[in-house]
Length: 547
Image 1: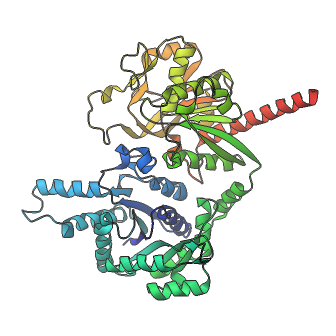
Image 2: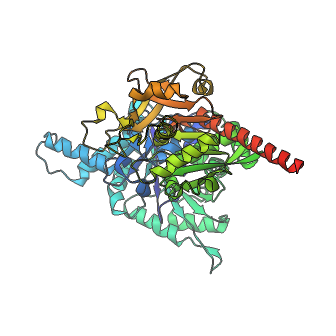
Image 3: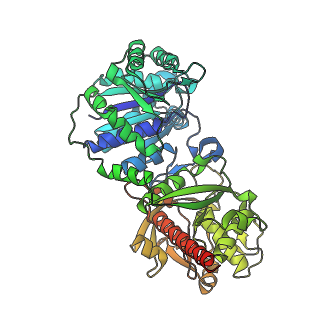
């Protein structure tokens, strides 16, 4: 039977339950166990697919086409194992299932209630992955904080499971805050005590406390927390602030979190954990040979979580290239013909980000035109690729008014158009082209060289596509369709012949980049940015020397 670990949070949101869950999963995986992590979100939306990025950050997409919480990206990046539809559950999805069963008569006329019907469905989903995939350990992160009214059914489901499975098969880790009060000059444990008391009122005694803190927890403070919260002294874990999230597994190992978890689950370590590759990666993060400046042009830049997977993919690719990638977030609404040089000329590369709608779209066109003409490495993802196509159509092919029908239904040249199968769809949620699709790469192209393969599989999330009626015209003028879906003939990748590095992709490569396997497109783009930086600095040095 699979062992289950539940991770709850208290005091405040954004303490890092997802990172702690992923870090623990990494350590247990390194000890030889098959581990998966799932996220249960208390909001009533069926999934995050229709949520504004400002509300929820990016929407992460799995191979099987699930639109999920961004924490699943952390799980994949740390464990290097794909997640699926079953790894993210929302209250909306739980209630939808129960209501559908009631309509079908599955409850035989009984009154449908939160207990037992909702909690039973939550428990079924909590146990599903362990039964279906035969994982040794399933880590379940509960979104929100203890005390939220939305979280109560989940806590009740955990209470019931702990009773059913037994304390050696089901444990709870509670992540809480030990704040430092500047005026008093000391760390305060009272928020943690109150948080645990709230959890106890729901019938759950935490087995382990992970305490977020800015300063080290001295032994006396740990003893106080252990005494008042009724946990073992060695189960009070210090989660001190670190420079980057990839240090957290190493900090948790130093705190013996994985050993304590195994002890409480009555498991022994299958192998001594080997984190040499992880250590090598973090060493490269801390000791890069150079720094690159990459511009990310988008319209959700006020909330950097809207581009979380992209920023993490740059960290992975930077380490692979022995460089630190400093990402400059530039709002596309603030770019114009008058200021584009000022905003972009000093950059080593530019990525035009994905998104929806026409707000800020002209700034993206202006960006693409500038980097194309000035031979700055360019990477366009999803809408970014479509912007590259539209800009090329307008300024190279001379197709005046060329556009996407998403932005203009009356454009005379719809070089980007709604996919045929999308034209009859009116319901928004979960109806885009979602998940992993095959792509055949054209021999001799930059894409084929980057991947080192003839066929790839990448994740999608879009409704609009390159209009193949214009394909020959584009290719005659130098924009090559270097990646094609073999089933639909959809153009997946475009690139320019006469440019150092100009690649646009319809899919989302950032979703498949992990610590152990940085995505080749990001690695290639960062490498091109390095070369551009070296050429520019060499030219500057020659000019300075001659003067």
